[in-house]
View 1 (cartoon, helix red, strand yellow):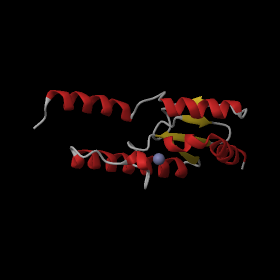
View 2 (spheres, rainbow, N blue to C red):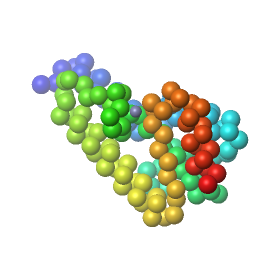
View 3 (cartoon, rainbow, N blue to C red):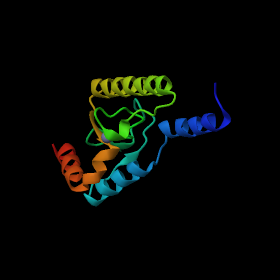
Length: 136
Ligand SMILES: [Zn+2]
């Protein structure tokens, strides 16, 4: 049984899955820019069309929403009580696709870093991690 409101809500949420230029993504971009690195966005020629691409370094960063990409043990990834099976299934599919994209990128010689939405809470720590990833 699907009522109008929940299907509306559902499709809205679904549209966010592959959402580009999401709030966390923009925050990460600003952080990287402030660190002095330059990048390209959403390279569709690469597996998974990574959010932030450092072509000359052969490195990419994905910015993942905790719920959508199923961040393990993260409070933001808590399942809603209604339609639990539906969400679990969706998120499992997303996780699988993420892992597959990462493997593909690595097999092409790219280094991959994933930034989770919740890690933006500690932006200093995140900036350190990104700097290390891009410098090594
Ligand atoms: Zn998280």
